[in-house]
Amino acid sequence: MAGAAKASAVAKKLTKGISKKGTRIHTKTHFYRGKTLSLPRKPKYDSKSTPKKTTLDKYSIIKYPLTTESSMKLIEDSNTLVFIVDIKANKRQIKAAVKDLYNIECDKVNTLITPRGLKKSYVRLSKDFDALDVANRVGVI
Image (cartoon, rainbow, N blue to C red; front, side, top):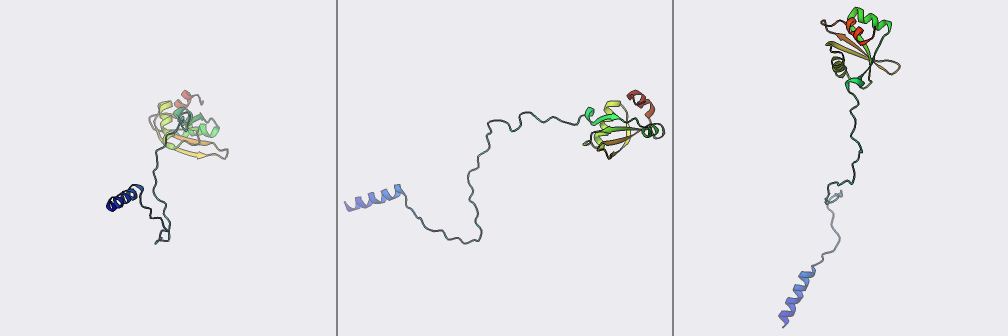
């Protein structure tokens, strides 16, 4: 009978579990937070209600051609058109927009930002195109 009592006591301990509660000995100077379960996010709604619109297309890159005396001189003498363009546009985008809008090839594009905060673009046309003809077609002259 004593054996059965002893066996039931051991079985009771095993089902209950043995607690080894005590203070932990820390051997390092730093405390590292334990890794816990990280669940993926499941949002109830989108963070943005509408998709972001692409701001720079060929129509918004080039604002308008410049029609000052100095730009007219550049059109006549050095085969160059002058445009006011979007401040965020770069030279490659300006070149592509001019090619798409006016069907002309350009050799190079120079840009500067004016003291008024506008970006001015000097578009040098290739030898095949005449800046005077293009300016007439665009409506500069």
